[in-house]
Length: 381
Figure 1 (cartoon, rainbow, N blue to C red):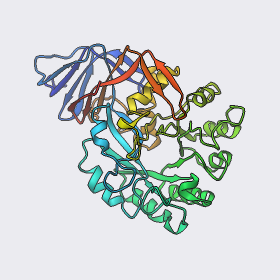
Figure 2: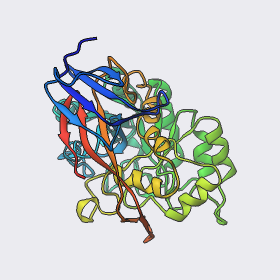
Figure 3: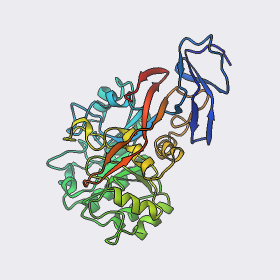
Figure 4: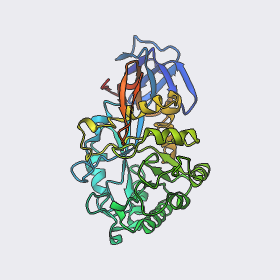
């Protein structure tokens, strides 16, 4: 081990759910990679030292559901600017590109961004649209080309996306889901399914999905939801979870209900992945009720999950879903130096959901620094 580091983080608690590590350790970074993680490392030969006392040093956060194809897709926004101040080193676009324009996503978003930008490729040719919806006419579905896009670009394409809400597919929900799973089978990748206001039942949706496929907006209040009229978790949803279907938060402006989350988690459905679904069509200033990924994480802290669980849900868990656990979501010597330095700030913070609900959290999760490939970006806290 070299004692010379480009960057040294000292005094913080390394929190790495992938290995179960939670300990005060120093982290040395050289040439954009993790060079050492030890109880003490020499400061004198480090080119730059960050004193991170009082902070948690975690793997770089993964925002599993955003819309970053800005300037091209109607939902896109410049996600790079918000990721780099919020601890997010990897963001995954959820279907803003389809097989017709996926190469543009690679050129215009993936290549120039500081944040690592990956993508679920829509089964719809041009990606998700607003009005008209992308699969109201199934002639715009191209599962073969969507699968080929993922297979041909394994360092960018990570899965298939389909939205099943009525505005997006009209009466074509059942066939759209079938075509998406067909594309997932052909590309050997997970399918992310947007639920909420669907024409087919939640039981049919989760019953069709394979182990490893993803229900995003899992806590949506829009019917049909994961709970029945009495607020109990659907039996089919519980069985889907048990056989390996993934449940992703995908907060957005219309898909998060505090009371529904409490009921579902009380019945045993904790999220596998916590994501923001930040996109460019949010009308509220500053991304409104969502804010950013740390704000979404704070909601789950206030709802009773512990920090270790929460960090797993935005690091190693999403990395495993896309099969990137050997590259992302783990603080380990030799890996890319993608690191989030997070702080628990003790101050009252008002949080809002999508249906007018409010709660006050006594603590919030904030990013002090984002480190992407060894480059340091100050946080927004």
